[in-house]
Image (cartoon, rainbow, N blue to C red; front, top):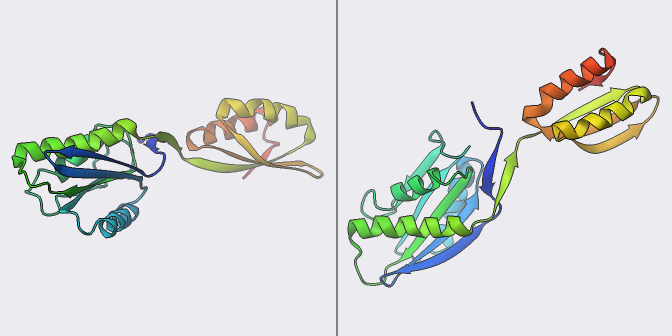
Amino acid sequence: MSKARYPIPAETYRCEIEVKRSRFITTIEPTDSSEAALAFISQIKAEFPDASHNCWAYLIGQPGSTDRIGLSDDGEPHGVAGKPMLTTIQHSDIGDITVVVSRYFGGTKLGKGGMVKAYTLAVKTALEQLSIVEKVDWKELTITADYQFLEQIERLLPDFEAQLIDKQFADKINLQLKLPAEHLENLRTCLTDLSSGQIALS
């Protein structure tokens, strides 16, 4: 079952570490599609065109997801950059995330094991400092009801984390709400039961 809400990066975040004189600049971006991830990767490559490598990994969807992922070693030996970067974000409990590590070679070879450790550390360091927000799948609902139901409806809303966007008074009340997708059907049922079907929902 897919989670309706999960942590994602709050904004673009960047930090830098140095390992044996090589600089590793990690940039993290919230991305909700493969297209957005690839566009962000292109943007970072354009920003650091002189980097020895711009290695990357992305995960679209909920934390730990494996169906929409991508990675690249960008010229580093196979398996030393993209794979450990992806593994690190898959274990981070964060979804909709793209990470690019731009490496400037410092003259000292790290060896394959050293590179895996360095790329893992570059991503872990950034994740530890990353601000996160909760991604919520919001849905809208319009309620049309007689005035007699207004107080009962308003009392129900907090139970379903529903937020009032707009309220209009005519011959009936029109309420425009937004609420998390996972609560939508339960609120519909509740309002129908409450009014014996007299409240119109759309």
